[in-house]
Image (cartoon, rainbow, N blue to C red):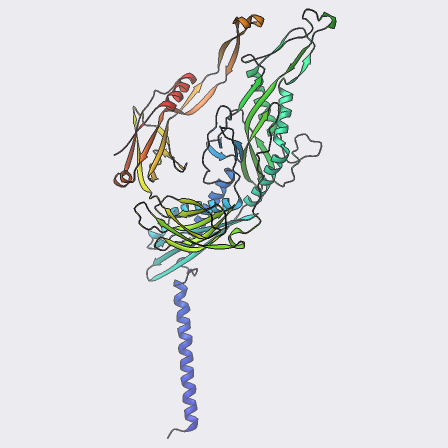
Length: 614
């Protein structure tokens, strides 16, 4: 018989054993998960994660630098060319970097307004980091016995006033010996004032649109450095060389705009008096594309004739020369805003029409959306299906752009996504899928519904430039522009040879440069034109008026020696069967003068190049 007291003692012993087992099991769980749970990094793998975070920091900083140097853009908006009437395109070439204009006028005289929103900048930065993160290497660790694999990255960035946060979701699996771990999330913070600089840039842009700050300074420069209105007491005609007048204006514009600043006192003429914290600098170069014209003018000569020496006007007792010239001037400026060693820059076009500042009725002030479109407005049920040209389902990430907001919708499963989209008229569905060209479709979602989007497959191609008479040091710039989307891809050959293409019509342009330097001495060109001879001009009588045009000394690098263009249809059949695209063109002799260089530019613009699959 078991005694009562002994039974209680046995029960207590069992409970103690159970408790010990539970404690040991819990400890074992936490010890094991320390090596496998996301975000828990042991000393073995801490150096790997630290190096990866350093690389993530570098990629983020690199993206910030590009945004600041290119007016808030990493991926340029569609290129719009200029013309002789409107000399600037949709980008300003600043030391070889194309910076999209925030405000400009196209070659066909249509306004260009392309100020990026903060959300757009964040999205571009996220896309840039997501593309670049694959270049973070672990060679020093793999050679030391580590096995490291990474998954698909998903990046979200937030630009604040004084910092930028980067949040990366990507499985980073690490193994060495019997120890392994997986880190799924990675986050870094960069000290950067890009958010504050962008805010000041938008303030300045809006004030410039409203008050024509830079245009009014430009009108002052015009009236101080060029003959506009006035008279002189003389009986001899006044004559100006229009080219010299324009040359003086270019120098004066460059120097006076550079003197502008955002500091000083209220009586300082060069104080912009703009209520922002950033230091402002306005750059202009006489070598940037510009257009200067004046009327009335006989060829390149401005003539003002005296009054008082004509027959019947002797009663005046003196002669005077009145003049009134009307100028149209167009040139770009680069606005730079600086704080704590960081600089954000964007270009604007300046237009003077008929001696006065341009009309700003077409200018658009920039405002940030006050409504959270993705979360604060009503939604409609919507179904999205993705397929390729053969009807095969495609999976991809879906987002929806409404106003200036882009809402993440989700990922398709077996080519289909059923979700809810903000109710929006003419919003844009954006589809991204690995191996396919990004697709968009304009859809109104107020009533709900469905949409099927066809995806164009991307085929990796290698490009080979077959340059006849090559001397071996040439570099080529190749641009592939798709007709149906105005999408443009550029290669710097031979450093870059790979390109992803989808089915469609392309215009291919090639410019080949000799990697050498040429020095052209200063010269003077003597030009003469026939102008009407007074009243006899009515009968066709003319005489010559001549002027000397000085051409300063010039040093030119990367001299154009070949190029041309072609329009090609790439079918999906050709793209799927062939791996290399060959472009055939001939090389001209390296020019030895500006005249020869101009001839080559003319020849290249009209030249056709051969394009074939090999």
